[in-house]
Image (tube, rainbow, N blue to C red; front, side, top):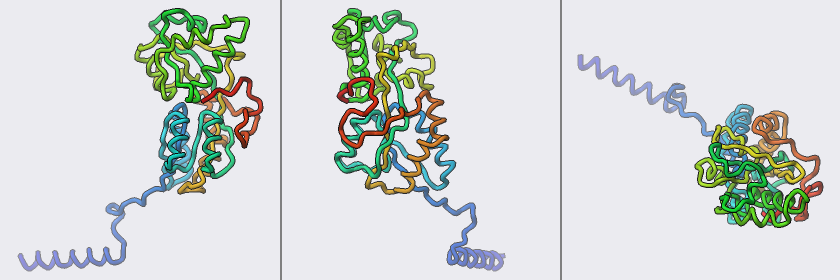
Length: 293
């Protein structure tokens, strides 16, 4: 009995040794080859659609996994300027992309891939803000993105356009800004303040106002188009990208039919028919002064 057991154990050991030597381990015990990790720095407002874009991209590019760093575009720009490594940068405005380009960090020429617009959001159960005009009422509390954040810059440009119109008082923008009780580092934080009922209203992108993650927690008040300049989103690869070809493929996917269809599903509009400027000037075709973002 013992001798049979010893013989069986010896035979098993010999087989195991042979398997190890030839590298032909059974499939069940063989570890999968790690996928290449493509790192994308993207504006916070792109979080939901870009995750969906990544799923579709990965399905078309087996072996490549997309990881994200979502934040305010100005924060992402600062991270890149201070040595953070990434393969792709997608910004919510031209100014942040221009700064990265000026630092000689881009790998190719940026191109616009989507546009967005601003909206006012309020808690569904609150009557404090029923119209855009109500933003200037005394005692109203408002959340807005900081001036250096693209969404904050676009919001202020929108308010200035209103103040310059006969439809609003000359001091409209100043009165609204006087009601701002918090300046957030990204637009998602503004929406969250409204969702939690901490403020009477907030200025966010239309896509954030209707984002799936907020459900029915936001009531949307539209801003007329004549006061609502399009927010233009540029994308580019980084010069020191670890996966240059995959980065180019991802950018092409975002700009292609499949990527654009996904962005449309999340409320983004097609890019305006203008090219990204390759300098720090105001983009041609802008309908309002470029905000200081």
